[in-house]
Length: 169
Image 1 (cartoon, rainbow, N blue to C red):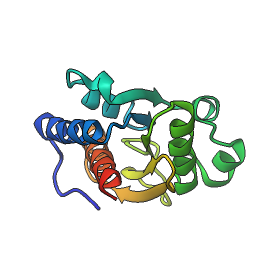
Image 2: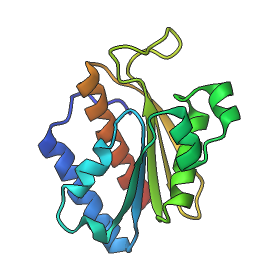
Image 3: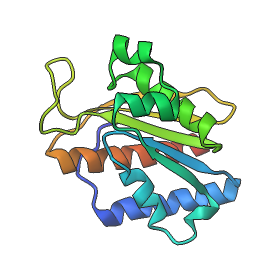
Image 4: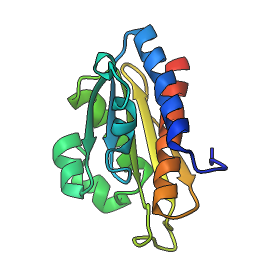
């Protein structure tokens, strides 16, 4: 799913409000493991008063070392597949679920730009993963357009939409 427009703060807030209602309805706790969004997912969710009732924790694991030490991503995975890969995001989301004691987790890793892109992984390449306790992790590749903020906003929105989908699966 590629978003057609860059979401506004109001739109991101509306997504967070929907997640809050769903998490409370199911009595679940959510965790986020973020790289390219730098904590924006956690910020969007915790902008809501009372979010401590359903938001457990967020980890910003920007470096490979942080991904390994905080989330348990394996060095071999990073060396073989790179930080921006399906394999890495699946290990990030599973690590977040296991280490942060949540019921549902979301993880993001990508290249927000304006530098860092390659022909194989251009700026705007983002992997997002989701997992619910007891279920299999799933990941999706996105190619977002725009500047750094646009890529990051679209990533936050897609991550939140995926959390809602995970709750209704």
